[in-house]
Image 1 (tube, rainbow, N blue to C red):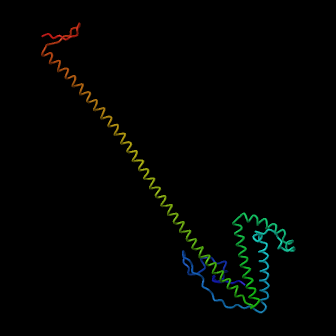
Image 2 (cartoon, helix red, strand yellow; image 1 turned 90 degrees about the vertical axis):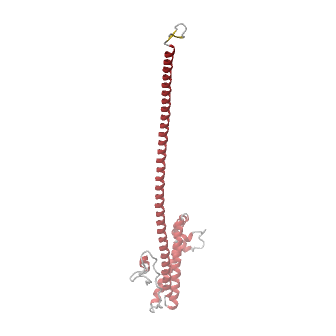
Image 3 (cartoon, helix red, strand yellow; image 1 turned 90 degrees about the horizontal axis):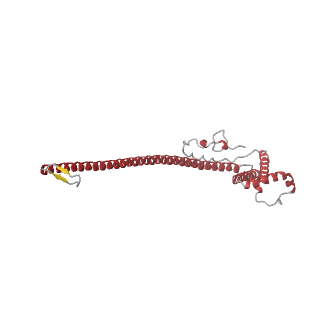
Length: 266
């Protein structure tokens, strides 16, 4: 029997997508939980419980065997004294293979966690089937199965709600990270432009200093040259004036070759 709870018509619960949980859910918002159904007490025909009980018992046996041969069941065991001789002979090869797999699974946290999750799901299914089987045998109903389906639906919705919030949180984090990267790039570009401007101003300052030093040296040398030329002109003019005064006063002067003394003759 397949039960559909809170799902669109014609779809099983496992086939319902997150967007179909509630028809009134808007995009980008958390959908509302599916309305709780009031279950009517289901009943079976007189011969149906026998077949259903047989199927449920077979499911329990298969789940028990599956739980026993799963590699996670062997973790932590030091011997196989609790295994019957007949079962040991039948499952010897499977035991050895699973034991090797169990040793490899111990070295991998991911594999071990997955196996534990499968084991927990198997145990949950086994408990639900056992409870349903007991109810079927006593009263011929399967109300507990419907309640388990309802609880599973609510659990899946809560899981979806958490996943939805987590996804929204991831999107918000990515958006903030992108904004942070954009601001960081903008500040880096601004800092780079400022550094380039500082370097340009430093170059301009160095050029101005070099130009000022060159002009200062040029002005200094030009001033010294002008002073020297002026002094030379003054010295020559003074010498010429002194000679004119001597000639006008004493007459032309002659230098005695023997003594080098200047002699004036009126």
